[in-house]
Image (tube, rainbow, N blue to C red; front, side):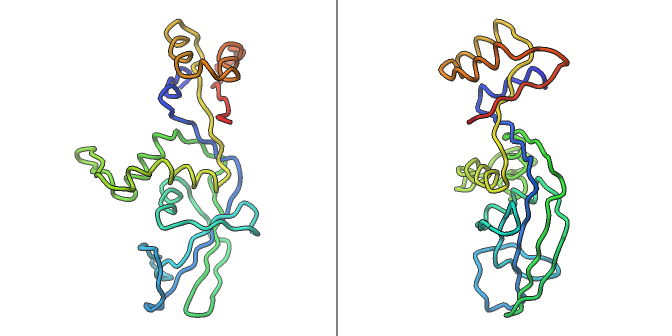
Length: 194
């Protein structure tokens, strides 16, 4: 991990430092229309999914975004409310904060979760979800308050330097971090994407 070179391929390190909340609305009424195809075993079909960092302002999730949460985080129910039209509102708190993922690992977990990866052949099925998986995962990352970082190699070698320069040579703050970060205590070197 100390000499991770995946940044040269654009493999971000996502850090989720903030507490966030998930509000899901379900219905047992078969006549209510919904874009969601997943259901809750107890409360019925999903009508809406939203995220909040403060339990006041919620951002909507489309039907392709909740699986990102389901493959990466654990949630604890903090309230269950009965609503009109046979609806139930479930509010959950993310339990596993802070959390760190490599983009490549989160993408793989997401594609497995939504059955776009054949686990026997490791072949990604051709469809629009696979083509847009990065955007889906990254939008959810933003809604959860996640931050993008690059992991830079701890040991400076000629080969590492050549690769880092090829990828980040025009980004002075990343080059400065790579060249000047104190190499003590074998700490992972992370530099913000922004």
